[in-house]
Image (cartoon, rainbow, N blue to C red):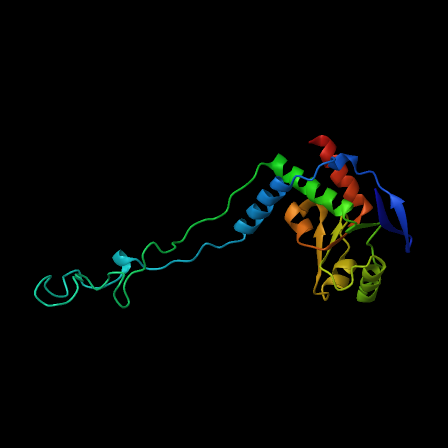
Length: 207
């Protein structure tokens, strides 16, 4: 599959073997993966007070018959002002986990979809001699990622490169060990080092 590759400061088009990613984008698996990552971000701290949580008196407000009013027996009833909330949300844990093999397969499907849509580019190295944001901006211009949500995946940490990207709002940097399907799908453009792609290929062969 043809992708844009930047080597030695020059951008060119080259053929990349993507057979290890398979030949099918599993949409249903991607949907489950995205839902898992989204729900795991929820805190689940929402809570409202029901009838039993209110500090009102338990005795009746007035007698049931002879007053000409409705039979409201307790002030914590849901139809009363400041009464309890019926069937309201309580504190709960929304998180759940998919099998490790399913998460890896979802990441491969997301990566394959990025290759097919032409939204992924490769670079030989991200080692900068000094922190320079202009070099990162130039890199984004070469790959047509300026003004888009961009994910940059690296295999070797470079402090100068990380310092160069911290002021760019729509750019997220991530090591290949933390890469997942959700991170790939939520960004319009993906820039990845060749070493990071090789690590993903080796992990695919092991699984």
